[in-house]
Amino acid sequence: MRRALIALGIGLVTVSSGAVTAPAWAAVEVATVKLADTSETARQVAQFWLADDGANLRAATPYTVHTEMAAERSTVEIVPDGKPGSFPPVAAGGPAAPDGTAPTPSGKVYFIGSDNEPHWCTGTAVQGQYRNLVATAGHCVFDVEAPMGALGKWVFVPGHATGTAPFGLYVGKLGTAPYPFDDVRDYAFANVYQGVVSSSPGAFTNVGRLLDVVGGQGFAYNQPVGPPVDVLGFPAGAHPDGSRPYSGATLERSAGATFAASVGLPRMDQPVGAESPFTGAGSIGSAWLSGYAADSGLGLLSGVTISVSDTDGDGRYDTGVSPYFGTEAAQVWRRATVNWTGVITR
Image (tube, rainbow, N blue to C red; front, side):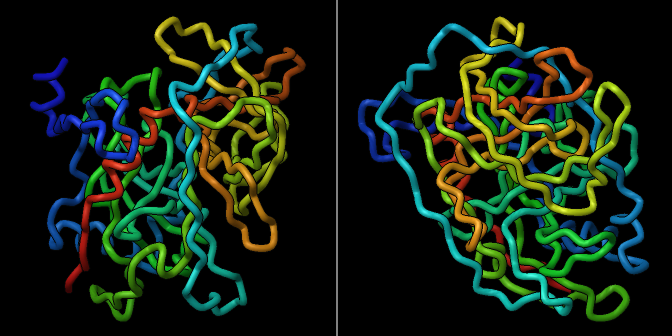
């Protein structure tokens, strides 16, 4: 498995216990994948998405890979493997969009899937040393269909507006996830270049670092299971009964209690459920926020939706599923925060 990952351009890095201030933590391995590793490659990616007034952004469809799983409440209590900790959110510093929309850390990640078609998931700007970090589901960064490399032309568009990038388009440079990466630990962080907007055909204007423009959610780990979280995302798919309450065009928010879940995957370590009516397509990667404040739109990231479930069998999804963000998740996040990116040049 290790050789296969390296052959596909996925690097393996060991993070020592010193990565986060808790000397008793064991070392953890992370998988890294190159998204657009040079400024020239990043420029080409930005051009692909911004050309023709964002035609490819408008053409993208919700990603439908791994959107549903069978989940139920578990009788096995989730026990944190360390003390709880958190890092605060970052307030936005950029101006409002021309239509008056305020900057928001929530947005969509766009990419080319294995079918060579443009797709999107939900993504969220999150606290990080270089103010360049995006959190989402792991399978919205790593291609889990074939081959197990990076999804193509990966970008983040915060404050989504159909076919436009009101606060800039941010091209991904590097993706980081736990190793081994699979259904067990399906979350990832991506470092993005400074944002750009079109200034003329084939030319861009730099708008700055992601968190400087739209702010970022904080990060929390080893939190108790039970208290409610707010789930923010862009659900767009149908319920099993065929109803479609969401279009994916606007950011949606739900609030519900969390609970230990069982998903029928023997290797999935400590899955968590959150009461949420979101459908799967489009909402994958949605942020789970503890201590969310509606006036600021900020809270502490404590999970991401990796799938949804209809737990009572009534034909409507009622639960989002996330890996538990414990000590390992904190180490993976910490490793991702130290990756510098830079500016896209013309």
